[in-house]
Amino acid sequence: IISHKNYINIMENTYRPSSYLIPIRLEEEKDKYVIVQGYTGAFDVVTSNIHSFLRATVSFSPEDFPFSQNTFDRLKQRGYITSLSKEEESAFAYKLAHLLHEKDKKLSKCFMFLVSYDCNFRCPYCFENCISGSGHQWSKKLFTERMVDKAYEAMLQIEKEKRLHIKNIMLYGGEPLLAENKDIVTYIVEQGVNKGYVFSAVSNGYDLNHYTELLSPDKINYLQITIDGTKETHNQRRYHYEKGDSFDVIMNNIAIALEKEVRISVRVNADKKVLEHIDELVTEFQKRKFTKNPLFKYYVTPLTNYETSEVTDSDIDYTDVKGIQKEVKEKDYSFECSDYGTSTRIYNTIKNKKPLPLRSVFCAAQASEYIFDPYGNIYNCWSFVGQPSQIIGNYRNDKILWTAKKADWHERNISTASNCKHCRYAFFCGGGCLAHATEKEGKFDVSHCNNYPSMFKQAVNKAYSQYNQN
Image 1: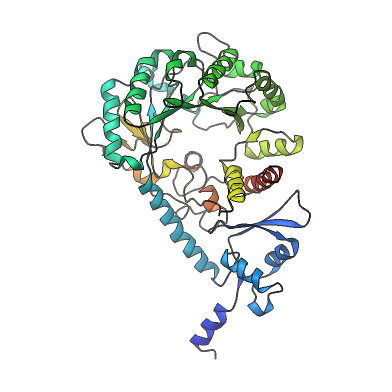
Image 2 (image 1 turned 135 degrees about the horizontal axis):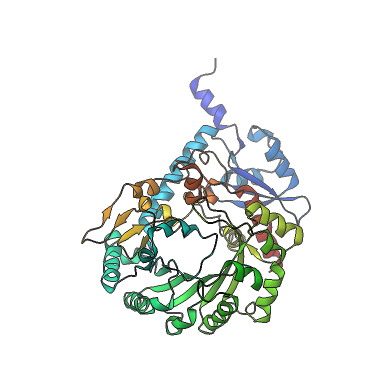
């Protein structure tokens, strides 16, 4: 019979590869692998011998370790091997997820103004189509100066320490930068600048030429604008409800914004048809000399068939992340595919020799994001704006009144999602988009993996290749 003391000594002298170990083969290096640790963020290149040992070994003692003492110490220090049981590792990850979530909720707050729900486009796949049943006049509601002032007062109720406010406020809609919104947008921006904020906007870019005096590094300094492929395809899908074609107008306005030293990120909503002709769009960017400007970038994201959309279009051949990844790999496309910033984080990890940043939630909607609409409602996720069931509070009165929905979002992290509790990728994906997960399952304890393991492995090789080239 082994005494309890001797049993503990035996267990402490027994090691195993971590349950959160992620091995990835490097495509550009023969017999080399990357290993990543899921809750320390460690990231290292190892030989195939070490990789094979970690993949094939169940448990071992230090005396049986086939490599040097230095290698053993390094693997142990960075969490690739551990004396903890699987249950103990999971318990540690559970606690870490809660700590990270509490940090996110306490250490920063970000704010958005949903200027109005109105839009001058009629995109067939828009996820806001579900609110069109509220009526045309409802969507026309615009912020007043009084409601703008109350929103700024509410920001200080949410977080009285201004140093914890993210200094960039986003303008959203509908279409926030409609020509008819100019006066109230000017008021929002001028009041914000006086309080120490700068602004960004998610815009279709059609009326951007009306905002030239607000486009600058110290006012509206960043724009996300969507272009749906070539001129022909874009004009079929993203058209002005009165004036029709929009491609050339938007492209000309992008040039104006770049001249004003505004950063531009072009989002390309890609279905299979758009992907087939993506090179033509890139050529158009090159002809206009956008790609030579360091303030300009573009990326491709899959055109998703949101279940909330009431409008369908048989001309759209929807795809997903997996489909785009396959196209990128097979055809060696040079464009950036949306991977939620994973490849950028990995590149910075390699460059700066620091661990991969960890997160327990997918985005700020689960911790620190507040969206003010012109009716006095507060939302936390832009996928659900305008839906009464998703209101987390209202700021119409002197004191914010919160709803139970706020807790649904702010209590959810990877430790409370059944699919994430033991997942080795969880601290990097944050459980995936909660909006998509709830749309699909109708509850808050689910995750949205969205092919993340494959995306992560592709991002590792992309970042490693980029680092070697630089």
